[in-house]
Length: 256
Image (cartoon, rainbow, N blue to C red; front, side):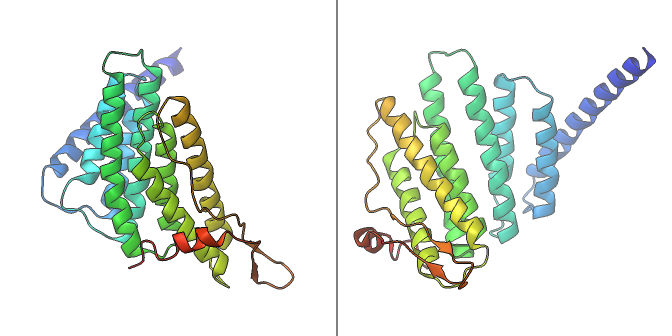
């Protein structure tokens, strides 16, 4: 029994500390200070703790929106570490919004809420992707991580996803696959190919779900029918026969 009382007091103390931390974060967000990666990680910890102690209801969605707004408020540093760190947090917040929206009782404004969330996702990832193409090469993992996150959200919001976004992700995936297939040595190539495959799988499932829901989403055209692999004997990249129309379509996209 004493242990049970101690645990209850500890939990109450922890929750109190977390909400005090939120008030500190809110004060920091109200300034014009540009957050570095260490600041963002502390902010993530605060909001993640709140989410972990919350119920699946509208309060979670409110916390997620506040978290996203805090991460996206100006000024923002276009630093590689900042973009890489913040994109993961932004993805997770949108992921939580989707999960709660799907599990809550359907209301009259459900479709509108989903559409509004998807518009916010597009705005968030337009910024992240614009930064990614300036900071990293097509095959680099940080850039592909953003593409993976975007494709996962497209799948989760298949009831609201738009064709333009799917095509953008498809083209970016296609370009990365082409670079990986035609480059002799790429660091972390195995992980990069795994991410490309993940994006391709997510897009395929997104199209299938969207069509089941009655949305018109174009099928992929000119996608690569190739899986690059590293020969353990020769240490070189080999490729299966490729769709050359697809290669021409993918070449030159998003190059800076």
